[in-house]
Image (cartoon, rainbow, N blue to C red; front, side):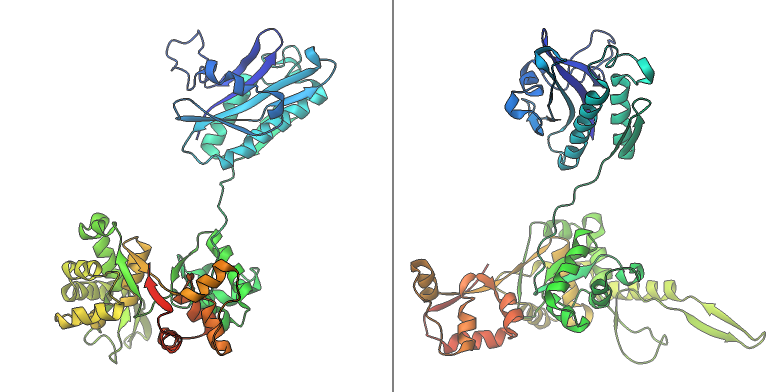
Length: 464
């Protein structure tokens, strides 16, 4: 939010002077209005940065207040012309924002103000003409009221369209800044945040239309590309677009041989803050079949949606009964009886770095709780990672000879065949097993078997 906006200029006799400011007294204290608050910044300290040296003219500047609470964003402009004193006109339009606010979206506004008024000054001498800054000659709007409208409209609506005079209108819009999306790798698993199939349109990119049906939170990027019959680079670019608009998030591939460890956020799960455990139960618990509610013994995960159609023969009309709410409540009550909050907390807190998911499952089965029968393990791990309760402990391989060859610049000691050569290129401790599995199309067991067959004592597998 914009805390203050000002217009300053350099006067030959007075030096740097704040000509207009909004709200009044935000930069320089005013003598009128006893209810006004003290200035946001100390003008005596920062005035040399409001109108800086010539080296900083026509450049975007950011100056922090001495207390570090506010930042001043400005774009000092110098217009050379023999008409002015000292043959140049120097001014600056600046914004005052909080230091911890995202300032990238305000940079365009400051540049826009400086460029627009510099052009008006060159054409009509709008700022330097008598009555320009404070008067209303020729239909001109006073700078003081102009700045006030700009600040209020940008804070309230994020945009403004203000007539400055009969010939000029100031149009500005505050665009939020989105950081470039993280790179999408072949071993990532995109998880949709919404039902993408419901929002896709025929005018969308063809690659997006082909890959969206396969983005289900289970398929990795490489498999999505294969299922959609799209090249891997195009799939990665399309998923980056979805990631940029915050419609998906990226997780690691799930394997029962992977390791997960708890984060400090698991304390919120133990305390059930914000109903976190209840939310987890609705997401990970496997619903048992309702007696008399259907045929077969298949289990379903999540909430059940559907309708039961009953034929009324008395009046030959079909009566549709929506059984979603009734079945959902019955399943939820049954799940809560089968998996208590205590059991979910125990499941979440027993992950550790030295224990694989398969060992974790066996641990609870030996303790008398059949995890696979009552809980979707993949969803439980996914829930923990998304909520910041768990993190993935990756596995890497390091070759001493390969690292020595990289350090000395000698030719790397490759293996006896192409497959060994390809594997050893990942033995620098920077490539996880997920990447090796994806790019070499090998399982974790095949990689470990191949590493054991190589020179003993040279390769080390570690977790981090």
